[in-house]
Length: 394
Image (tube, rainbow, N blue to C red):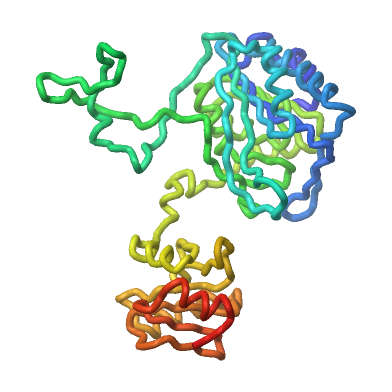
């Protein structure tokens, strides 16, 4: 169900102790009006995030947290989404309403986004505070893959504490006792979930839209099929769409009639973008062989994945230069390797291009295409730097 109203009035529409999970993504105290147009530019969505003071903001949120506390079941939990702007004030408000003893986790949602360079560290995470209403809250453990550095042969050996309290392998005689199965590593409080791509089909043009995949993880941790999920600042309806896809009941509220209409449309036509990064992991995007990766490191080049014509880009110190590099494979002729590199560079029109070849007899340069060929036996950062980065030729 969707209601166009202030969530401060939630008790008019929900019974006390009737909700299994509250997720809220309220204004972040950015002190600006957010606006964005949809894909076909036919509609603009806005919301105001301007406040008289941080105290007025904190009281506004705290009053609504009290209502959320009222509607939650004793087995329920609340997840509050925020960022660095005012997270410390919101944590304080949650402590006051739910109690410090019911704080469960500070979840870091980590993502990568393009950004203009500015002084300071690039902001690439947001925070989700997880509190329960009581100690008897629902929680369903999730697991993730082991680190590549984990010695899997050892984790199957059962451990005990010795007399000094130190961990030791449990054995019968000299033979270790093995565990039948392992599920993986319990899910941590740092979640690497991609931010929505600007071209993602899931995008609807609403400011601050979150990915369905993020909400699905929240719901999987603390709810079951049939549970009631409440979003008091539902905006474009991502929480509700995730709940519908996961067979949970849902209830959303928002002050914007446009947001309610958009959320209703999404619920009638749910679209989710599937992320290869989440399904396969970051390592699945690395397809360079060890030999190629090591060669690129040797010549101080930044590796490129998933490109048949370009293996990397040259670096001048720590700065990546727009000079693509290809390393000839043994199954390629010199001409084939050259054509692949030129084809890959065609749309970007790079000024200089470098091919490292195992069969080229000497260093050469095609001035028409600014195409340099260096024999692999001669390739070094010093030679490449003097030839391409300094603009000189041999």
